Amino acid sequence: MNRKRTLLMAAFLTVLPVLGWSDPPRCAPPTATLLASGLEGPIGSTVGPDRALYVTEGIAGRISRIDPNTGQITTFASGLPKRLPGFPVGGPIDITFMGNTAYVLVTLVGPDVGGTSISGIYRVDGPDTFTVVANLGAWSVAHPPATSFDAPGGLQFAMEPYRGGFVVSDSNHNRLLFVTLDHCAKFDPNDTSNIKQLIAFANIVPAGLAVAGHTIYFSLAGPDPHLPKDGKVLAFDVNSGTVTELASGSPFLLDVEFGRGRDLYALSQGVFTCCTPTDSALPNTGALVKVNDDGGFKVIADHLDRPASLQFIDNTAYFVSLAGELWKIRDVSCHRDDDRH
Image 1 (cartoon, rainbow, N blue to C red):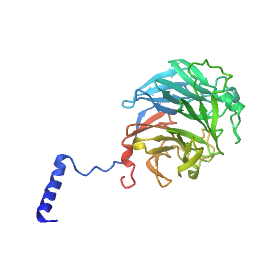
Image 2: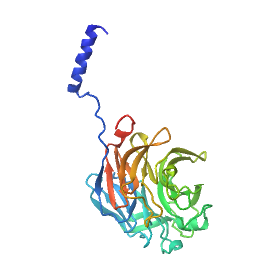
Image 3: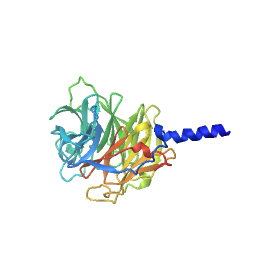
Image 4: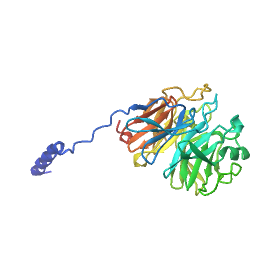
């Protein structure tokens, strides 16, 4: 490089900070910040069409709307079947939207476990009015899985919109179900023809779901005692019927979601000691992890308290805790590369 070019380059580098073209800042350590508390038995969540967070509360039989900026909680819908006494989970367990219409997944409330309600998918018609559009409990009783199970009606854990209907994970029956919707038909609780099995597994405990095109991504909690090697994220290509393992090595994975840039993240509830009264992980052992190309996970944030479901709004992750709380982690994609901490 000649002397003139060297001097020009030095002058250009000197003026960069003035123009705002300095080296990009390194990521600050990821920190989980409490956004809301006082939720009663929360597990599932979604981002609504208004970009607010909607959380299921199984104990209260309620759906709460939470402002992602202020943490203000308002009741979106109430009057759903509540979690049965003595059960660690049940009642409304997940929620999703199809357009502006909300649908709620309700589980472990049927006659098979001593309840009097329908375990299935409920359409929200008003603040306290609902229509059942799929009797998952009745279908599951009539179509028992090949693996052993505790609840004849299943333990449906998560659902996502898929091909005009819903894909549903059943953690107790170890399978994925597909529910079609007929918006014009009147619901008949004895008609379960709109439900079918997509795929069945061995005892791997499928949990959280994410969908992209014809591929269904799902997390595995793994069987008790939910060892790290059993915590996996898999991809199921519905067209070909193939299942591909994307990553493994993080314990008790309860959810999987896409973040900014289509990076795939999973939520580890943490270290599990079989069998606790609530069948949950130990407090403050959970983590938000990113699926790596090498088949492992990168820890984004750890020491989380029993996280149960995950959502993203732009570059901020939100997770629901079994402690009745909603937390957020900002600038998640800043930590996506291994050379930046």
